[in-house]
Length: 388
Image (cartoon, rainbow, N blue to C red; front, side, top):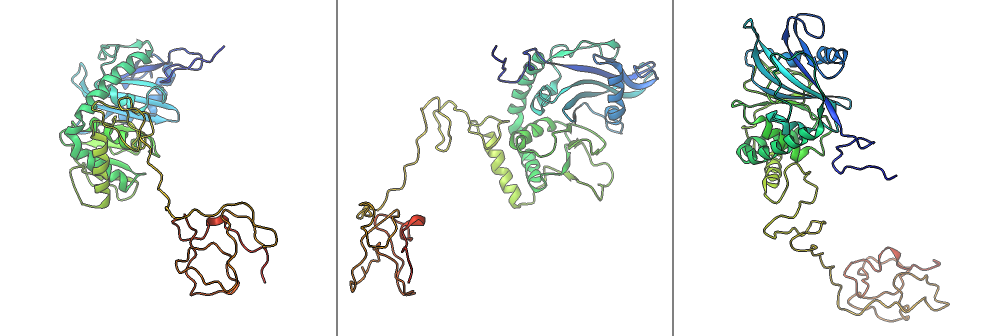
């Protein structure tokens, strides 16, 4: 029986549709942990797993701080990804807090592109009464997530020209410190998702570390590689691998020039945003082809191949077969009869005769007729079989 195969990887080894778990976190008098306070109140996974998840990520889910805004968070642990939509909320008693709706699944389903596409949180089944729901929830199939992600990515791609300046600054800082973590300033609170999508389009296939982020936060944690803040809170840490970046600042170095070229490459209409820069772009309308692309162009046919450099029109190098017996020569790539004794050398130096046993620094380099190079006959030129 032939193995089932899905070109986009939307099925497991048996061809079954994949799905992810969902968990709701909020303040409640009786959460799944058996306590009163902020924690998991509804989930599709076993309660023990939801409680363990809360113990590891509770600080990020609470989102404490003076400034709390809606945010999208993506965390990784081995092959497991947690995608959270966090929003400010007040309970029945008027206490300020956060309300979190999370998806938990394999990285093959919740990849960075899909997670960014879900920034609007409009997938089918996301309209739960989060302030009231509790207990058991159904699992979420992958199909509605992919459909919503495709629509969300189209919106992010359309928003890229609006954040071109901020994206260039972020790309430049990534080029300067490719293994660091970054806290990026976003005063308006609207550039985080488009900038992350642009960064993923440039570096998604080459990033060494994981693609974890928070589109808005108040804590510069090491659990997240990209954190966007509306303002700087306190002094930056003196040590560590995290760097504070204002994408609107410019310093005019080489990284900035390269970043401008990369962003310009990504925003051209011929190239699909999100495709690694090294990949061949797809054919587009207008019959604009690329000479270097290797794929067949749908509108103009296969690309032209560059013509090989034409060789010199001088007489070809003699290749009449092995040297006659008794000449003491090996058969190489180019053979010519030895020059007779007392014969004057060709002033042009275009000879293929044997090398002189007496070294002379005045002898010009010998050139093989028909070859534009300065060496005689290349690495396989014949040599005397015996030396005096």
